[in-house]
Image (cartoon, rainbow, N blue to C red):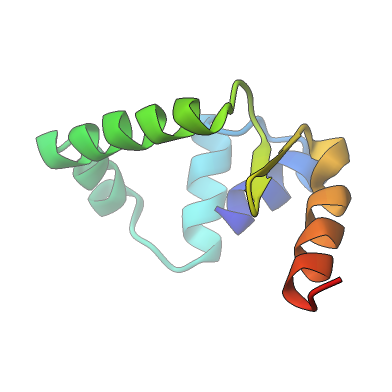
Length: 93
């Protein structure tokens, strides 16, 4: 996930594109054919459906979105806000 976002935000490779997926999997040392085959399995699809349902229940409506301690941050321009919120939450501020 971190590699995919890095390729998206820094190199402009759209998230989910074949180029981004290939570059991200190479970066993290994964075999593209094996990973893509696993993504097509029925149990993987069922997990995606369940995670999508959970995201909707949290109020997520777009990507990227971040939920920190119940607070929703939407958009790549809100990543730092989400990180700051997480830091304050962890130290009890």
